[in-house]
Amino acid sequence: MKSLESLFDSFVESRARKVARRTGRRHFLGRLGLTLIGGAAIPLLPISRAAAGESGSGARIPAPSEKIDGPAGDETSCDYWRHCAIDGSLCACCGGSAITCPPGTEVTPVTWIGTCRNPDDGKDYLISYNDCCGKSVCGRCVCNRNEGERPEYHWVRNNDINWCAGASSYVYNCSIAVVVGQATEPQPEE
Amino acid sequence: MNRSHSTRLRRLDGLGMVLCASLLFGIPASADTESLRPESEGFLLHCSGCHQSDGRGTPGVAPDLRRIGVLLDVEGGRDYLGSVPGVAQAPVGDEELARLLNWVLTEIAHRAPEPAYTAEEIHRLRAEPLRDPIAARKALFPSES
Image (cartoon, rainbow over all chains, first blue to last red; front, side, top):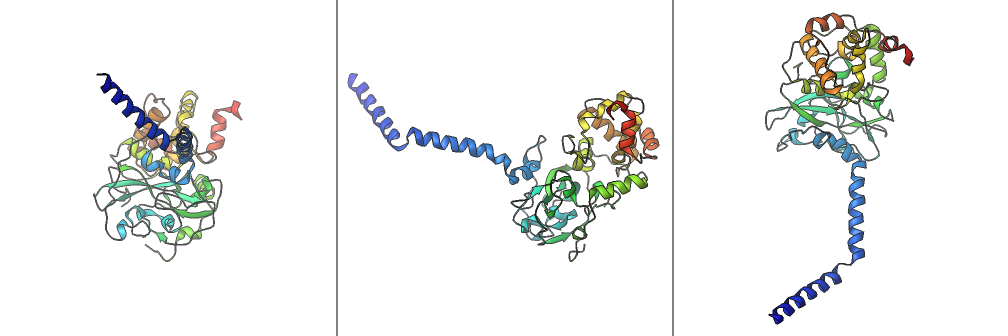
């Protein structure tokens, strides 16, 4: 019995020494600190703020299917399904993506909301067309689609407005198309 | 669709100009057909672009909807809520607008209007949208001026 305990002690001791040799406390604390600081910094990044509407900020948003072949599934294309009411440079061509602003730009908090139909699942989704501001106009992948857009006097549903008016910089760079919810009805003005 | 030339790049001179124009000229109430979409969806579609998805608003652009319940406590405040441009000119029918305003007051401001707004009341209020909502609000709360 004693020899069994001794054998067990030896095994545990050898494993503990092996682990201690490979992973020092400083190494562990360093990695832990990096994880904590890195995790805290993620919400500060523009990608996180822009994508918040897709994944967080309270309401749970159903993820639309993106398994779409051709231009309707290509976020650098004007025919991308979310771009049905966009007007401007596509951020996916400007260093960002369909849902994130390019580095060095600021996503405007005010925007207009349209509705686009996803060709893969046939459902309609509410799309927030936020402008990215603070750097001169990107100019690439200019796209002007106006499904459901209203005249300028209905400014809350108009895409000709420089929505950077709600940001700290008035300078327009490009536009993103963030899914903010599922729609039970298509564009009311179709 | 005209991809060769974006109206975006011609640029209106911004939100303020359009807002001022709509206030000055008093765009008539919408004659849109009624929708059966849930109020939460209508809020996202018609209101959240400026007021944010939780109604907290955007400083300098759109007021905090969580605090509009106080308007129900002052004389004229109920009418004010139905005739401010953002409400009166929303591109929805009277019935849907009444449901939407009741929902915002109940769910965002946590102050259900009593009685609830009706389509008839909304129709009357939005027929004469406020030309100067800032002055009208100051008149409702003179001590804040």
